[in-house]
Length: 230
Image (cartoon, rainbow, N blue to C red; front, side, top):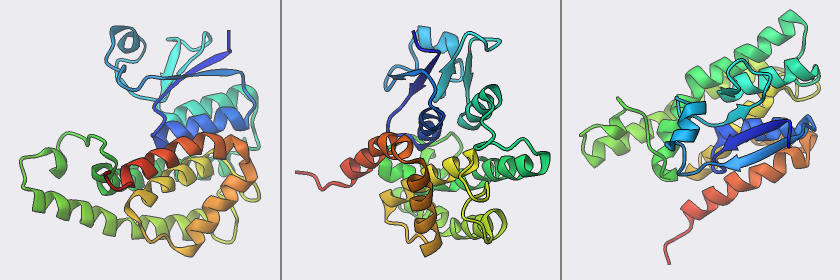
């Protein structure tokens, strides 16, 4: 039996971040695709939030842990993966800040801009889940897409600067989280700045198959939803 069980949805970039980490760290894990099964009683018992990725491990207080950044932080702390999550308080604070900026500010815009195209359900309270007409929903999607430029610029100028990665000369878990998220922007033909494309390539090149192998699932899904109907 594997040390870790990771329940995932293969098209998800949130899930992709944890999938890359366990491979990059060389951990003993088993992946379980729970597409269409998150509401089953057995899964809800372990994960009442019904969120993926879900990490299961006997050493956890409740036996399981969700939220991609928390999973990556936990595994790095447990296995001493300083190269991916620095122990220096200042350096770690920058990595944490980059991840929290993504989850709190950037990713909500990514979801609003891409989920309609990807066919993913959006969150309660959004224009897309309201009784608004199709024109207003389409405008909201365009507004979200337009709003991506500012946090992208902020990430570039503040978290990267003259460095190749947030972690400096090698990718950190923050770089994993940002690079995989940018994958979704391919679904809407977003005009990524040149630095962003170079950054994504650099993260993938540094991590090799640990990145490209699971990323193929996300890229395949994006290609399928963009393919013209037969």
